[in-house]
Image 1 (cartoon, rainbow, N blue to C red):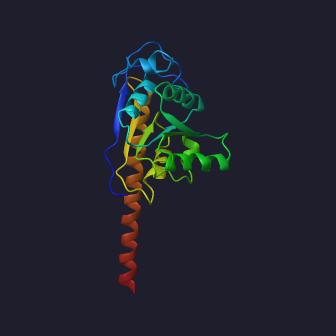
Image 2: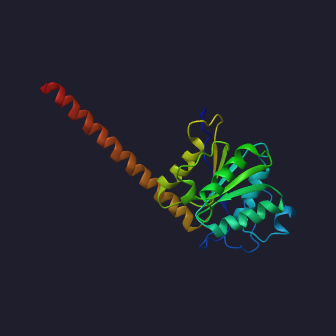
Image 3: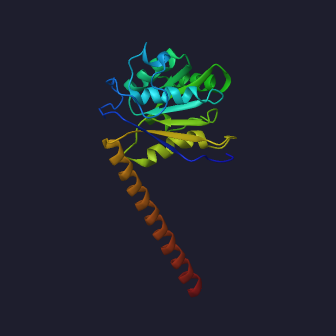
Length: 211
C-alpha cells in the first residue's frame, strides 16, 4: 500500500428509510449529474444510488468496491449500473464460496468488470479486494470497526495504489447522527488504548527498577 487518499463524504438531499435506498421520490442529489438520462429514465432508483453511479462513471480507469448492509440496496445499484452500462459482479450471503472466488477473479482479471458489490457482513472477512482502488460505503454502521474491516480488504498487503473512500450520507437524516456516534466510539477507543499503553509503560518501568 503506497498511500491513502482522504475519505470523502457525499451528502445527499433526500429522506432516510429502512433500508435507506428504497426507491426515492424525484429528489435531486447534491452530488453529480442527477439528470443523466442513462440512469434516471430507465431505472427508478434513489438519489444516493444515482450519485454512486455518477461517481463510478467519473472514474472509468479505476475498479470499485461497493459495500452496503442491504441486499435490496445492492439490487438497486445493480440496476443502476446495468443502465449505464457498467459491468459488475456481486457477493452476498447467498453466493457460494466457489462463486465468491470467481467474482473476485473476474474483478482482478477481466478488464470489463469494473465493480464488485458486497454486503458489508460478507466483505468484512477474508477477501482480497486489492484489484480495486475506490471504495464506496452506501451507509454508515453503528460499529465503526465493521467498516474498518471491510476497508482492510482493499488496503491489505498487495495493494499498490492509493485507495479513495467515498461515504454516501443523507443530509439532515439519522445517518448524520450515526456518524457522530461513530466518532465518539473511535475517540473512546483511542483514549482507552492510549491509557492502556501508558499503564503498560509504567508497569514496565517499575519492573525494570525492581530488577
